[in-house]
Length: 126
Image 1 (cartoon, rainbow, N blue to C red):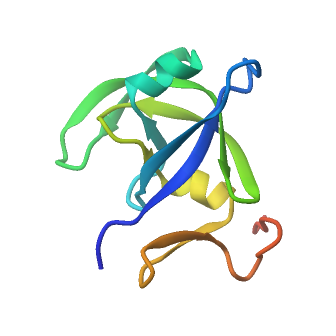
Image 2 (image 1 turned 90 degrees about the horizontal axis):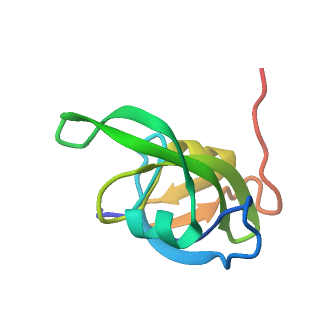
């Protein structure tokens, strides 16, 4: 089993005149949030909302910008979220994957819509 990457479309819903961009990103079920690069921030003219402290893979912490609002599209699903600006590769975390009802298929190393809900996302609300 290896790393699972996928392609998503990211746009700035506050500036609909800007084209969405397609990005290849790591589907990181160990990360909660979306993480994007500074280049994506510049291309989509995203606003910095504040700085937040994050823990990265090596266990260290750092303060990074939180930007938004962004729209993430994957196949027949989408969500709205903020994103941390860090690193040189976008990461699709567990929260946006849950929001779009996506699952990681380890054997195929693919991100797919939840097979139990192939047409529209479905959620548990307690």
